[in-house]
Picture 1 (cartoon, each protein chain N blue to C red):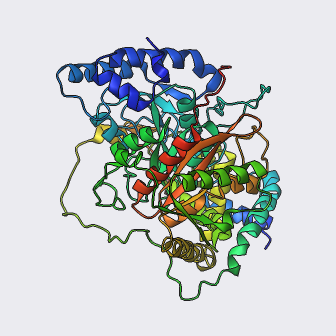
Picture 2 (cartoon, rainbow over the protein chains, first blue to last red):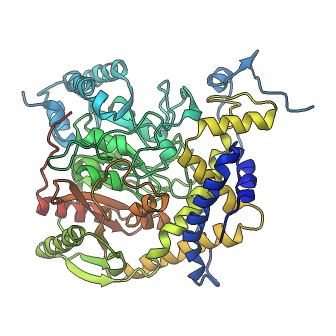
Picture 3 (cartoon, one colour):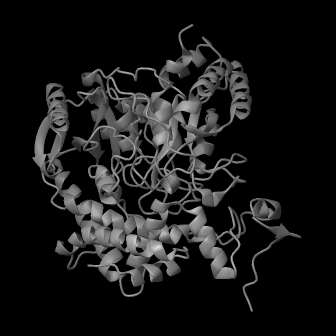
Length: 95
Length: 490
């Protein structure tokens, strides 16, 4: 299995990571080597095997549908790169 | 007075409760030691001496009032993966900038509720992705241990390298760590310390920076098996804020440590005898088997046939979950934002500047294996292989109570010695199975190699049976009589 430069370009875009043109080839080689090593999983017969969920049988717990916190606007915004008047300020996303 | 920083946690707690010394005296001794050593060892990435002294004074007041709790007055270090209120928490990644949580992780809150004192935040691989602590934005810590006659710095392992280095160098009584593929046990093995990862779900993940949610688990690194039991008891317990937290009571694990192994059946998995395993590791393993036999345990051979598929399965599951978890770092709500020409440009710039090379590599692998049309071939298949790995363990445990293996295929290595990613990944070969199967595993120091570096043995237990891990590790600790400390060069 070979990961191509085009694959890396696509995956980088999907990952929202800018990758410069000269890094595409080395990354393709690295990913090819890692994915090649991972390929050995194809040897395992997994017919009829359930995917693992948890080691101890557990069902997802339910809680009452009630508000448990709130009124912490200051805390929510405390680490914002940019905020104004109680709002996050983000780049324009609608043309 | 003896050097307070050299005490075990158990001895320090005894001394505090007997009022042989105060928490302030103990805490001041650690602050002084950290000041003198940290520039060289780089174990702490945030130091909180003022907060520590404040907490120590409060602990002293409770001791005086006869209200001391389980960890009253004990100074601890916290891996930078745990959110600590008002103390910068970045998982050693640039992308979190100066992120300062407005809330506390459940695990650390439980430590403070029991009277522990926080000395600071400890170095780690960026987002816990690494086995050498080299990927930290703050640079790697140094292992207090060096090869005999050498002044080359070695890695304390990873990802909890700062925790392991700090405990080994007496810069705290014990530390929190976390383990996704071996990140508690491998650093413990590399530094002559004890580290345990409990059963998945024992400790709450609330407030821990997420890496791979189905594998991540909290645990301590400590100086002795008993110390690790004391800390684990304080860290575990059900938490409604983590839906995978198990509603199980926390046993009195400290009592298991000295129970001995008489009558226990210890399994030796033949698949852990890997190609090119150094003779010293093989010999250590044989020695461990002999120790347990001499103490009355029965040794049984077992087989875990899918062991060799554990690492490849891990390198699908962990990156896939990471790519999903780390999607939150978009530069909008917290962390560092790198402004681009448009919204996508801002995302891409923020993430390529903010994430280091190893994190980027794993995010791309994760995105690749989850991308359209590949889910069944990779993630789903890997999750099915996990079931096969767990079934191997369940079958083996029909014949034994716990398994004994080496913790790592080598002693600590030097920075840059493992440049190929796959070579680095192979370091987790003995530890990663317990994460995939969700089982508890402990590493206990057992010997020094021919170069004077510590080597650990690992005990893997049944689900929720940390008690057996502590029993076997306690027996090994006693038989090994491991008291070596690194020669102080820092």
